[in-house]
Image (cartoon, rainbow, N blue to C red; front, side, top):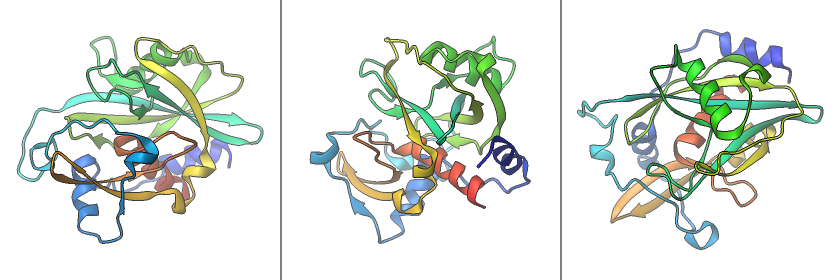
Length: 227
């Protein structure tokens, strides 16, 4: 796979699918092949505790949506692309302790989603914007908490040494892109939170529990690159 191939796939006309934690969960809950969440294996996973029926994107709900963007950094190593991910610190007020892409909500200084994603990546993991070759954008992703996220895909030429912001990022790690392009690594999980059934995609890797919106964005990347 080459940077040119990735750009070409992202630029192809496509019908954006109904994306978001709520839509994903309701679709998955209608299926039967869901595996139970193993708390003993991964430990308790943080949850917003918001019932799907009340979350942003739920049928019949018109809630305020907050514009946000994340950078999906693909490092062009000689051995193949890797995806840069972060583990958020436990002291954050939203999505604490979860695996995420560098990113955040749109600020007044951001002229567009790309500017937002690049700024956040530099602030959170020390990735200079001039090291990122923007390849395109994936589908918008709506989280249950109301963030409408624009995932911006960027090609990063090595070397890249992360400098994480200790207030926001507990760890920066890389996963081979090939791992996410293998369908057998796309888990469909069911778990119970405060007595409510939950369902979502998960892609656990090397002790990191990649799930929810992050897994949904990676699933969209898989769809775009393998279509």
